[in-house]
Length: 229
Image (tube, rainbow, N blue to C red; front, side, top):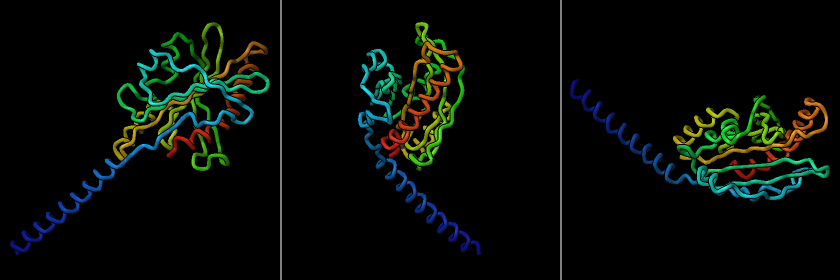
């Protein structure tokens, strides 16, 4: 009886190590084979609804040295009435250490560069028709002032098909994606528009929110087609 139990135990141990070894080998193969599809931000359309974009100046050298982005896009989109929206997208193929989108949130970087910020909140956007795989987006919203001019900002973080408003969520899920799928690519999307000079404060803010809302409806589906691979 004792010998039978010992043989059964030994057999179980052998089977266990065979299965564990196979699983480990499969995991290593999967991780080593994982590749991030190339993301070319320049493929983002210049025409987004009624908005027409032109490329802006690149990042300053000090910003490039700090961020060490793999890709960066800066464009200014305008409509026929002269309304303006600035778009910035920063993308890392591999996020780690200080080179992670959430660690360069506008909520941190704008004040660090001399801007005053207030009215920080979250906005929910829905795209049931144009982005069926990503039907909603939760983005941050804040008002910022520089050189006596007020701007409304919306921004969010992304990694593959996931988007995040909260900085801690972005950091957490990047870690999880790295462990499970050996992926840490992603970045930051920031759009802004001046509040303008005419009208009361409420009117100016309402108009700015309408512009960014309309622009986001056009931008988000196109951007996700590029990065959600």
